[in-house]
Amino acid sequence: MRLDDEDIYGLSEFVTSVDCVRRAVAPTCWRELIGDVIAPHPVRPRLHEEPLTRRAFEKPRGYAGDAAMIDLIYRRAADVSGLTPLGARLHEWAVNHSAFRSVQERRDLLATLIDRIASERTLPRILSLACGHLREAQQSDAVRARAVREIVAVDQDRESVAVVEREQAAHNVTPVHASVRRFLVDPTIYGTFDFAYAAGLYDYLEEPIAISLTRAMFEALLPGGELLVANFAPELREIGYMEAIMDWNLIYRAESEMTRLALGIPSDAVQSMRVSRDSCGNVLYLSIRKG
Image 1 (tube, rainbow, N blue to C red):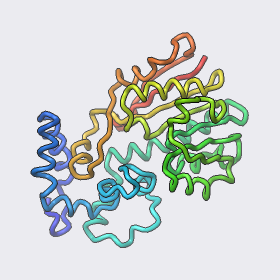
Image 2: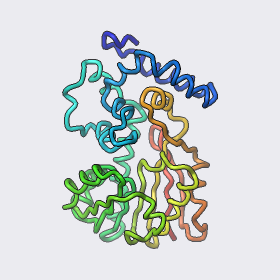
Image 3: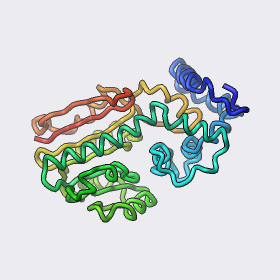
Image 4: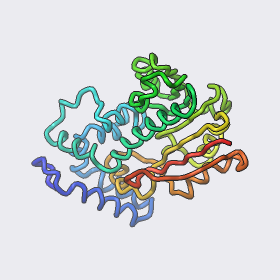
């Protein structure tokens, strides 16, 4: 890999090797390795010429993985024309990497689920927690056809809520600027729903909060309603790169850990529950239907 002449050959092998190192050492040693060896290495700022890598690292809204960065993964960014030649090549590589293909697939899955719910239930109400720019709704045929009564789109990022308000309020979308704390205190604060989901939120939640939030989402469901939560899996091979180069740290969950998220829900109230993976094996989905 010779970044000085815009040669990114071997970059995928570099990603794999970095993650192998991460898995081979203790967490404290890994953090020391990032600080002492990787951070000062001249290759890291060159990799930051790629815009979504740079945005995750710089955190202009105070956290990595914000909605504007996700738009870069979706190729919806307003302008990437100012990239260096290396940055442009890196960006083309990044958006096609498996972790980011899984983010694209997650959006597509949610749009499909919204359409399916709308075909099964007349004018359903839908709740999206940590909605970002709610791009799945823009991709939904049912939303465009106004076959959804309302999507309540909640996010603590005021800028994200403003984008949703500007672009989607005319399609029965109600943007709400709030943290999930309000919802945890009163799960019916926004009413009851046929479908409730959280796409990227659980990657940042410790287990006790994640269990409480899953229970709150379940309480907000109408009879026969469904909830869906997504979480990246620990097998994701880009973890080392994300942590060392992007300073993007997530909480990863295996199947058994996803199942534990339902511990706060009475089993006799559950009609069905399943855990599945996306086509890349990178993202786990917990789906629960209320009895």
